[in-house]
Length: 321
Length: 181
Image 1: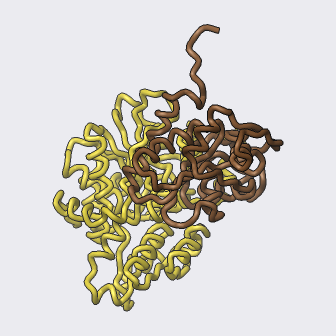
Image 2: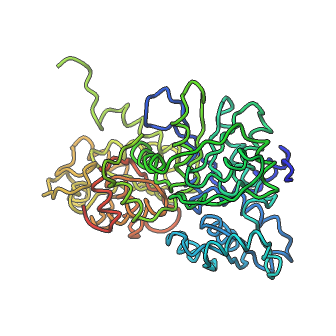
Image 3: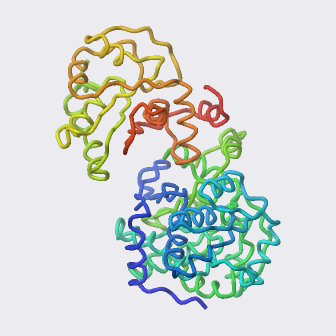
């Protein structure tokens, strides 16, 4: 099982990241009624348009000179690969990312633009690579996207910012893919104030953590969702007990609600979120305000193609929340 | 009419409020080289410029207009307020056919000029900001970015004031599709 990092580890990482990371503001959600007390944390404002830079940069920076010289690699649906390429460019080393051949084009193009090398393979092969630890046969320094300790600790810097900016927060809504974000941010928040509620959020179309919690152990689920950023069909054995201990509940969001939340963030706050980036807000709006209290929703990323954006914008009968 | 009239741009308190943008810029980026601000009535650009000038006179502060309605650029050229012919466009936050005389003398003192950007440039700036920064800007809000990307604001650290994001769905969809709304 993964050990919960200490507050001091989170603080040290936050210090190291200070010149790289944007301390993103908490912006009131402008939709709904004014008493809703929902704050958005727009991680789309980071250099690679997602929170991933926090953990991935921290992990790459933590490598020794010899490890860096080997070049770095990871496995990614797109955002981690961008963060890895960006970080590798910063240190003048090479970055290779195994990506599903179904990854959105803007994500693949962005990886190339930062100087990274995307290796596109079928999604089943991507998960096989992770499950069978195939990176061990490769010459690169491998940064595991979820279970790497330095990735978790780097992501935790986001949690510290929340506790600095809204010390009286009641509930934080965090999307789950592999669980790296949830593990890092959740641990950092609980280290500062254990009574803050942590709600994990998944699309109904890919309920890997929900199913694991219900079964008491990880199981593989089918993933059919617009939320490519969190479409991971299982929680690893080492992640599950760690996450299970951290969370207060797992909330599921229907696909059409995700689409409506993308429109809501766009029209009310003028920000463009990718589907996974709209999950947390969608979930918060499903919980009665009296129950959730003052809430923070992570808007994790913004890599969405113009085509999908236009489709969602112009949807027949498309509503906002 | 009953009530207090608040002038949209020449009210000193409106300008002072807008000036807080200038203070924030200096707080966050003390070594900024130039700042580009949309010019409609002039209250935003003159307010921001006053704050910047007071704290660091070396910063270049530019107004920004769109080619279809650029009365400030024409007036600065002429040395006095002149009327121009204006073509209506989707950039509705800025763009009238004349400069208010009381704002002209202030603008001439405070601003280093007016950068005039093309309408195509504004369309592509909106698209780029949506796709790369994930921020939705209206035409006026994207004009400074268009000007800076065209090189009009020179080199160095440039801050563009993205003044607003009120654009309707239909126009935004057109722009994302690569068309002129």
